[in-house]
Length: 420
Image: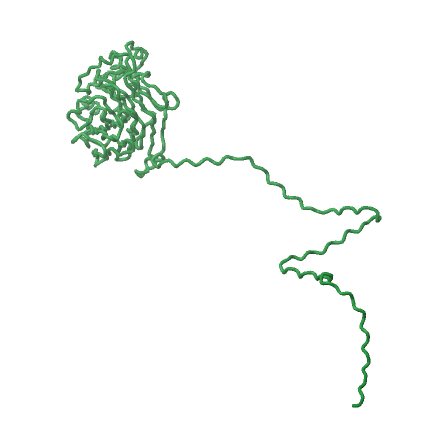
């Protein structure tokens, strides 16, 4: 422990560097954001293939051509809406009776003339009643087609020019010859024209129906006191068996004046009340020719009238007449009116919306209505001045003024025939 030693001196420090501020220090790049995409390093410029003084040629790039545009289609209008389906009754009115029908004939009278391939225009003096009971002379001038309708015109012509060029054709249409020995045309020629003319058309030998449906829109005559218009069906055996043995059915008929029987019957024959009928006979005669001499002894009438509120007596009404095996039915403006059926060979009837003739309603034989040899044809006529009006008392002189007195019109008719 003696004297203390002196330690050697430390080496000299290196010269001190100049101090830098934090701003002079190099900054490190911030770490990349975890969601930031990595950028590719820039590509080096392309090397020139020519002398260093030449400008570099542009590098061609391939571009995918855009797809071709679709062709432009011409604008099209939207398709029209489908019409509502027609009611099943129009398609086949027989379906509700367990049958299928085909439309045999339809006429809307749009052509401006009557289709005489389907209709006959009758020419005859007097109507269905003989020896002056009715005043009209049926002529071609009494039938007119205009405005989509067929019109039967009742008019007075003091010159009687329509009669001068008229030729009776009732015998050609094979109506019955009366037992007196004179044909209808012989009787027509013997009767002096009264000056009253009208129209009557029928479908005999052209459109006939054994079983089917007849539909029509009809306006009956309504303008004077003695008009009697009807749309009805008659058996084709009228020429061989006569009436009532051929059978008859009024689809609709109307008097403008109360008839003589309206005073003692139940409303049938009242003025301005459409009626329906089913004429037959009581028993089978041994000799039809002899029976025609006293037809009224054989007639079963079966007449009824449409009920108030079911029809317009001054306008158009839609009628439907259904004729099926063992059954016949009447409708007006889609309302059931009455029906008849074969009850053991006898006519039986029931009323729905109408009035009937008491004990005479539902009488006679059914035979003429289902006889395949006796289909029925249609008649549309306008009579004038029948003796049944006002009990036979007539005062027609006040109508002797030239011009039209009345008319009955039909807008369409359809005839359906049972196919199966």
